[in-house]
Image 1: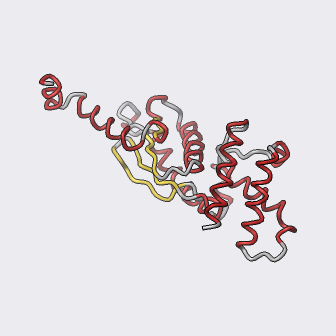
Image 2 (image 1 turned 90 degrees about the horizontal axis):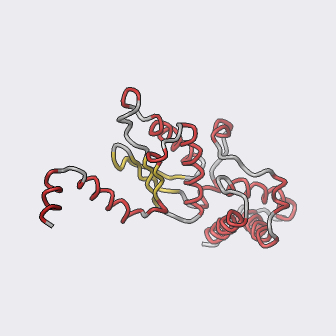
Image 3 (image 1 turned 90 degrees about the vertical axis):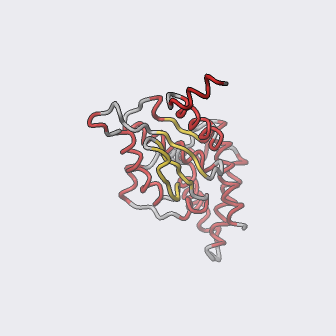
Length: 210
């Protein structure tokens, strides 16, 4: 105990450990993306961060921690990863993935995620297409499980009804594709990915019914 006390007074390692412990208690490992440890390129960091934030949004998480590092070992002391994430966040806000963010430390950000409804309602802009996470091919709708297709159809019909469309059946297929494209970004194909997709559809239905 005495040794720990002196280490804390000296400020060596202990302060960092204490702050890290607070972050782990607040966010947990599932809601923390540590880019500093894997040292990705700026482009890889953008891709990984967008996919991860979309996945956390679908899981209905409110706030997450993104650790970029402060760039002490980078040229000119500027972290390329940190700058890449800073330039990505405004685009994700326009697309309804995040609502706001703030600097948590010189090498990390707390990001507040948008609701599922904000993701669905966000307008699409041509300038953002180059930064979008890769979307599944439209043909992949045919490969979805019947229960997933049924949820997507219910979501499409409910969305059209909310817009006041009198004959929603005429537009269901197009609306299904639109909702799929909005919610499937960043979700990997496979059984686990489809399960997350169903979670997203259910969350969107719940919000439409509120």
